[in-house]
Image 1: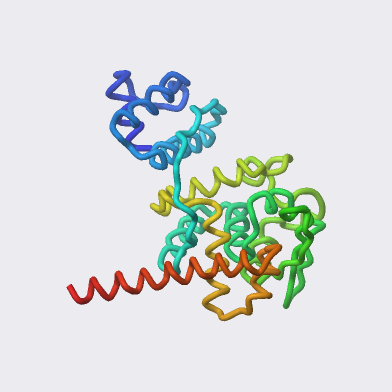
Image 2: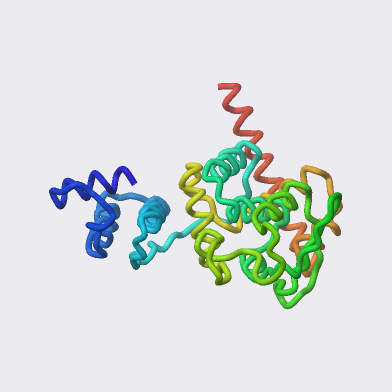
Length: 258
C-alpha cells in the first residue's frame, strides 16, 4: 500500500486519499508494476491490499483483473510457515477470517466445500464436534471432525446465529454467502500480510494432510477425512509430501556441511 501511495503522489502530484483514486489509477499502477518486472503474485497481492484499503474507506471500486499466475503444485505449509499465517489472521482480529482459516487448516476442506457450508451442517459440543460436507467432489457426502480450536473459532464468529451460510460476505457482516472467489481473496490477503506470496489456497488442504501424516494417522482415515475417492490419490499426496520433507532435510544437511 505504501508503494501505491508513493507512485500515486509522484504520478499525480497530489496527496493520496481514497476519494481521489480512480479506476484509471488502478490500471496504470498495475501496468507500472508489470513494467517493473514484478511477479504476478506480487501484482495480484498489491491489488488485493489496495482493494481492502478502498473498501475500508467506503469505496467499492472495480479492480483490474488479476495477472494469470503459473504456480507449482501446492505443497502445504510446514510448521514454521504456518505460524506467520496464523499470526497475521490473529492480528487483524476479524472473527470470520479467524474461523475460516482455522477451519481450512484443521479440516482440509476444498474451497468449494467451505463455500457451500451451512450452519445446519455443524454439530458443536463442549468436547467434540463435526461438520457434514454435502457438496463434496463427485457429490460424495462425508463427516469431518472438528478440533477444539476450530469449534471455538466458529462459535466466536457465529455468535448465536443458527441458520444460513456459515461464512458471509463483507468481512462476515453481510447477508450473502462468501463465494469460492471471495475465499481466495481472503487467503490472498493474509498471504500478503504473512509474506507468503506463493501461498495457494489449496495449500491449506495439503497442510492439513501434512499434519495428519506427521501424526501417523492411518491411510484410510486420511482418505476419508479428505474425501478422496481412491486410496491411490491419498498415497500420491502423502508420497509427494514425504518427498518434499526429505528434500528439505537434505537441504538442511547440505547447509550444515557447507
